[in-house]
Picture 1 (cartoon, helix red, strand yellow):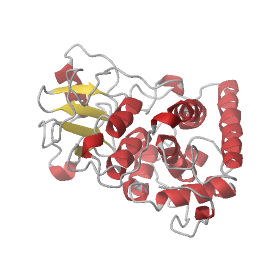
Picture 2: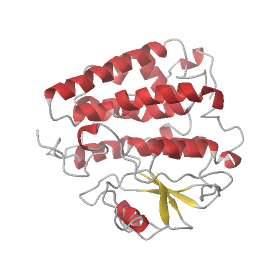
Picture 3: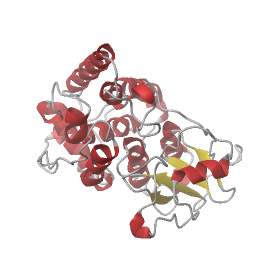
Length: 315
């Protein structure tokens, strides 16, 4: 199996970690050098990218659409990385850039790493503050609390943070990144190890969700947001494209009901674009799919009743 071309995958070669190059912090009081202010920051993301999806969900759930600006990239990328949509003239209206890579180089002209999304751009200092996805979502949840819509959920309650973080670590290594470890493996043993860990974890999550509506604390939290983007892409992409084919999501009664429950909450389904998701994976990762043909299926009803509200839990 040929190796992926540099920068073509969403995680590094082998899928063992996700690089973080910029780790600036935004704070309510501005003590970090970046104050939480309305209209100052621009989120760069893609509807195709699962890491971006988490930030888009949180921004929507918390009602930060008028506080944090948004520029979406095109789902198709080339050797130059994520580009801005041709339909908009291929230019980011905020910076005038044509590729996300230009934002990285504007921040650090000597930068030689990967040009990942999501990232947060400071329109005042004209630089990337952070491309660390857990930092981005937790910052929205905590440092921008003064701008949350009335009635917004507390996605990162202080008393639940140890449990959210512990479960989030498991989900990241075994599920979010686990599908990449399997799909991008270049050795049989590495593939099988990732495959077995992934499905053992999905089985454990299936059992966990047999007695509760959400993953932690009886309420919607950051933990659920970390899991959903992978579940949304599982049958459409990972099951076939990444050879994660022991079971489909729809074969897990609790996980499938849970995924539909989340999808039907505003912020989840309306940030999920299966067309862009499939185009990205099947047409960008052409070392896996040389024909670049995009599958038509699967045909499933994400809006069908889920009965998850039989459990006590609040959104």
